Image 1 (tube, rainbow, N blue to C red):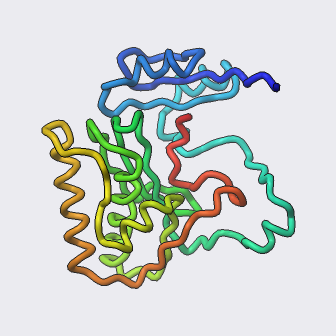
Image 2 (cartoon, rainbow, N blue to C red):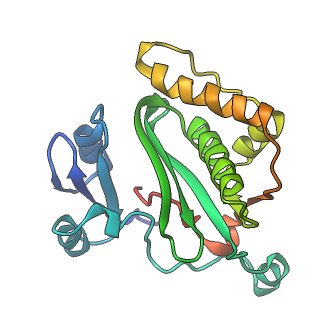
Length: 213
């Protein structure tokens, strides 16, 4: 069995900021901390350098991706359509502190970001990110397509329903108000935007990925 590679975790915003040598130590700093900012790195030097820089210079950025698919498989899938936006969500726990965002697929320029929400799930975030993206593209009369890496969220959007098992409570009241608005938007609007599943195995992480772990 191969030994798991050591990772280092930079925490820009948390109960304590700094570089931590284990995911468990990192979790202690970000647990129940709204708006926590953190990311993993392969070396201590990288993590230490990042700590002195801006979090948003590192969000969604990772090492060069090498696909495990064959050349023939990749050729069959093709390349991403860069006339598009990409959306993604991140949740620290399930449920846990959640946020979502949308970016330009080619440049990774952030187009919108929402959160952090005190109690949410990754699936809810993915669902909201798609609907937010659809509304933005419709408002701008854009012909761009929308990428997401969540089959579950695509299914919820098609059914015009957020089929989460998360119970409503005071802690997630604000989040569910947003969910209700998103469902209402889907039921009262039409859109021409094509929603496409991002091919992670061929292309690497979706450009909107928060790149935290």
